[in-house]
Length: 503
Ligand code: KIV
Ligand code: ZN
Image 1: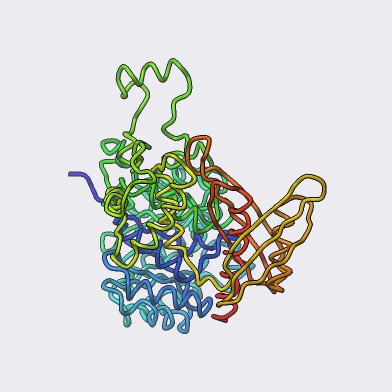
Image 2 (image 1 turned 90 degrees about the vertical axis):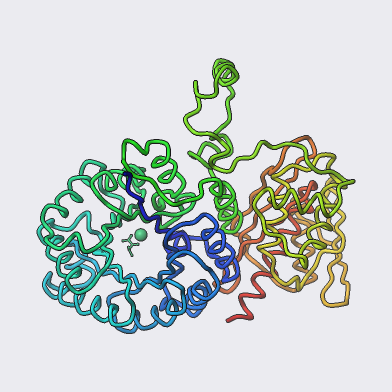
């Protein structure tokens, strides 16, 4: 019988450590709910001691998200572990994950401790965590550059201290599939109490081998894989959840293993994470890239028409790709909208439908055809909403000669109008917004992409802004790209104001 490999999602912890991927607490909660829909086994929701915001996010995931185990990260320090327990203790299934570096370079240069001191601390802190929580994971950080006999010693000691999962991280993405397989096999052969715990693996992607390394660990007996949606994470990222899950599904016989993941939720989860983090998915990214199931070459198209299996090893519907068909238009009613949204997997509350319908009509008025992608965009906008302190009322731009924008904004019940020039219409609109709000921001990043089909496709603008060390991402979509750009900028302004208020 095939083994069930536990999927430990660390998008909200390691994924969020990607420079520039910062998420608000509400966004983390929305992603955590979607991870529960995806049916991952464990959600690592954050690093509670690292900031009050992170603590709050982990605590809210623990309280609000049902299904998966909710885990928090802690260094092997009593205050970290206590704070982590505070954050996760109300989850249906809480877990504390504690870690300390074990490679020679970490011992000597970073920790400045001896190997036996580190074992002593790890054992004491795993014991401390076990007094609080029945489910404790221990990670010897940089395990793949740790001397093997020492790795055996610390793994055995921490299992004896009560750890229920031992995670083997390739912290710097240095290993190869063969080395990983040998390491896991070595642990199974040499750690006498290894059967008392689940062996996990956590691979970074610095050499582009994170998924292959994780699968090699599964082949050697690992029962848990740590990974992130879209492979988000420190530096080059972590192993990509969707690739691991689909590899195990497509090549189950090779691994004699499968997962509990509802694969039909993969696309939706991937797009949600991409939208909220502002990290655009590379078009040819395996499984979730826009082109992952597209056939351009005539010979391939011909084969697919004759029999899909000629060139297709996975069915698009298994990852949640719906045929993008025309379903709705200007004359569709609330009922039709709600039904299609529910078919796409969204739960639509009675109190939500009016606002969603209004936004749908705005798009339907501009486009003849409303596609599933447009509906997904509407839902992402709705889940990522922030209070609209500043709201766009109107925008007029001219681009002949000196580009000029005239902008009217509303704050509370007052409207304010101003005009500005810039080096293009988008820049002019941003200058006018800055004049009205009095909020001066540094624009760190700006991107624009088409998110639906047809000549009248919706353009989505994403901006990343900074002020006083705070960063915010704003997003908006419209068939008019200048309007999308202005709305995205205002969305970022409003997010920044929320963050500043929370501080
Ligand atoms: O990469 C790493 O080593 C980690 C640990 C905290 C597990 O993220
Ligand atoms: Zn990591």
